[in-house]
Amino acid sequence: MAVENKYADRDFEILEAVLITERDIVSEIELLNVIYEIEIYEHLEKPYITGYLAFVDTHAIIEELDIQGIEKFQLTFKSTRSDYIIKKDFRITGIQKQIKGNEKLELTILNIIEEHAYVSECLNINRAYNGSPTDIISQIVTSELDKNLNSSIDIAQGNIRVIIPNMTPLDAAMWIKNKATSPDGLPFYLYSVLAENSLRFHDLGSLLVRPPMNPGLPYRYAQASTQLPGDQKYRIIEAYSFKNQENMLKIVNDGYVGSENIYYDITKGREITINYNAKTDLFDMLRERGYLSSNQTRYNFPPDAEIRSGEKIGEHVNRRRCSIVASDTYRFGKTIGQQTSIGDYKTKIIGDSVKPYLDKSHIKLRVPGRDFITGSGNRNGEHHLTIGNIIKVNFQSARQDIETSAEDLKKSGNYLIYGAHHTFKLNKIETVLLCVKLSQLVNREAA
Image 1 (cartoon, one colour):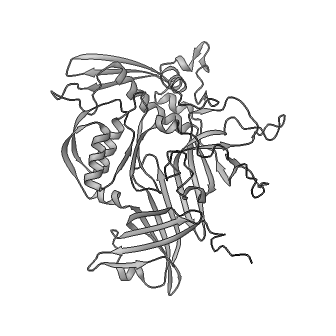
Image 2 (cartoon, helix red, strand yellow):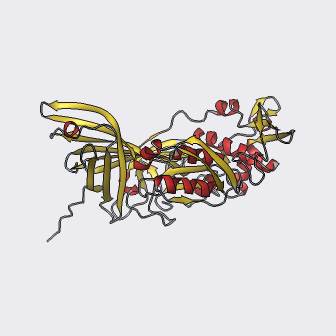
């Protein structure tokens, strides 16, 4: 006799969905049976996750609890394909809308933000810190927000002294993060993920060298799947968006192709000039240091393209920037923005120039969300499977003169997951991934 699997058609199971108010007395209401939809947003540039909660209100919950925009929401859920439990604490930040179904029924939508982000907005820091950027950020998020920090340790800036000037904890942490680079000049990200509760502080280089989570099962766009159970060769991309890309003119205008950067050190009374070239200082460095996949070294930048006859864009200097800096402000220790060598100035310029090239070739992929909440499958031994990880993507070429199974060199390849938008509705999870890359495939291989 066959045994029915009660989870066969479900991607997830909500274990708890508790709304808590502390107005007058502590009251808790379980929303498990009235939830209509939950949306969660993750992004590499945000140290918190946000979203909204939609539920069917037939018991005047908003009226009885007198929702004010400070209440707590505790969500606990798991994948139906694993035992790994995800628990997240949120705060309500407002009532987005209420929609009447009939006289006794309302659909209520509440905006939510992670607990530590709400708490951070209510706090203020005015104090001095000593140590590496990692140490200082860890001190801030641990002491002020009760959050652990999962971090990279190789930072070019070394130990610094800094006075936090009247900032919230997360604003202070992000301010320090923006000044940090790896020894190769790559920027750092401070971010929060859905599947774990620690904050993460990692440089772009450490993310780019991660192996793809799905090397043998690339995500592939196909209008209709012909795969048989047990013979899976790829994961399905249900839809994709490839628009507003390749704006090279904006990158040129912003000075991230070639620039002359002049720094006036008012403490030592000297002028330092640093020339920046995107090909040699950024892309050649990425290839030589192994940050680009071996078959994905065609830059998102055409250095040999000509602007005028005989004048290549890769040799063009179109922006000159002037900045005032101060060195040796403290007798012992560096300030947060102090550079001690020409190489230090160059790493900061490289760090600022990377993001425009990441944005230049982004793509959005809609995929089944069940793959990202299992808490397993990450080759790095971590539970989280979304932002900061690498996925392999395959698109078939649209050329008619080659085999239909050949790869599209521009859209295919390894991508860094930069953002994720999860929709939990009924029994399914739909996830839209914002993916970026710095280079394209060189050789066409059969998919």
